[in-house]
Length: 125
Image (cartoon, rainbow, N blue to C red):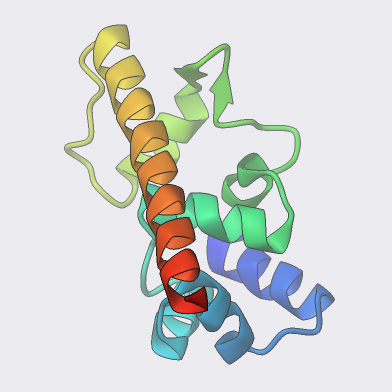
């Protein structure tokens, strides 16, 4: 099952429209439509936020339940192959690069959450 099909399935299970999910993710309805029709692949930050909003494990969105994309903080062979189908030049050069990317993504997510809280607090005043 494709990523888009899974997003649609989980969204519909929550009885949300594409607009509902778009509002929760701070994107347009067109973005959700493009993801669900597999015309667009969300970036890692949007994918992470989407998994949280839909209350599913990110691995459930990206792969069959039996095939996790990461084990012990290392990308599985099938995950690399799945990405390569969209970007054939994708190549992780070293474990250090992978760890650095993951750490940066975590930091960006924390910064975005802090920014959101700050904006919410400012709006309350």
